[in-house]
Structure formats: structure tokens, C-alpha cells
Length: 211
Image (cartoon, rainbow, N blue to C red):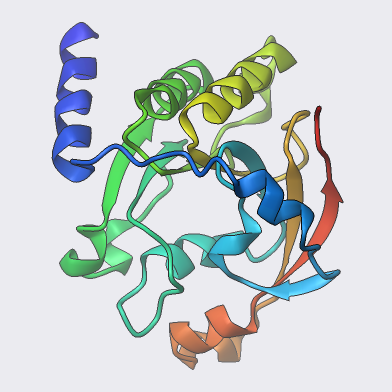
């Protein structure tokens, strides 16, 4: 386990050579703007130094929006995917697209949380996407809310943008929860991915602030 952690740290140093600086005036900027009820998919949906949660039928296109080819993706930084349930299919993307991603494959909830906390705590990773959708419901038995609150505290300290993909609400301390409003039909298999991403819309379910 120690060797695996050290190997992961080495990959992080190579992938993110410069520790990102936490934007101290982010809160001031946030207070001056408010999200509309329905928005297009963009990086501004997910604040830095906080946990955001995303649900809905459009989850399958979330990674595509982050990882697609240059002409397909929105303006997001390189990121780490903590893949709970090992459901990511790299064959759906080119080698060039996958080069923007550090893929951490997990088979159990405990392993998933350990990887997520290690990455968020590292301080050199500006954006972590935590996909919990592949975990079976029985895996969540015994998982306490304190796990999420610890991740929230660490994200605040390091300035990491942590985005959690969920089939249902799981994160009690999410600053914002978004519903991806996208439904696909058979004819959409012939539609370019860029067009599908542009059709995605998000609806804010809730926003919270803690003093």
C-alpha cells in the first residue's frame, strides 16, 4: 500500500508540477454573482476549495465534457478521475484526450475515499472528479457523514475543486448540487459529442454556505 501511494504521488508531481494557489478572494467574487436556475455546462459551476455534487441522466456526458477532444470539450483544467466501481472506458477517447487525465481505479468504497482524500490533501491537484456511481448500494453501509465532512475540510485548506458524481444525494456538505438535465435517444448516437455536450443543461438543486 505504501508503495502504491508513493507511486501515485510521483505521478501527481509529474502531472501537476506546480501547486496551484488557492484564490483567496474567491468568496468575494462569489458573493457578487448568483447562479441562474438553469445554466450551460461550464467550469464556473464548481467552486474551488469546496465539494460540488452532480446527479442526473446526463452524468454519462460529464466526463466527455471534461475530457473530449479540443474541439469538443469545455474549458476545464487537467484533472484526476477517482473511478469508483472502475466504470470509465478509456477506449471512448483518443490517447491525446486521455493524456489530460490521471485515472485512479477503485473497487471498493473505502479504497475510493482513501484515494480521494490523498489527492485532495496533496495540494498539487486543482481538480478531482469522484465518480461514486459504480458502487453498489450495499457498499455504502457503514459509511458515515464524517467522511464527507473531512473531505470538505481538506478541500477548503488546499483549494481543490472536488466534484462528486452520484446516482442520488450522498454528500451532506456539498456547497452546491447540480442536476444534469440531458436525455438521449437512439438517434443521438449519430450526433457529434460536442453537440450533445452543448445540449446539456444543469439545474441547481441547492446551494449552501457555511460560516
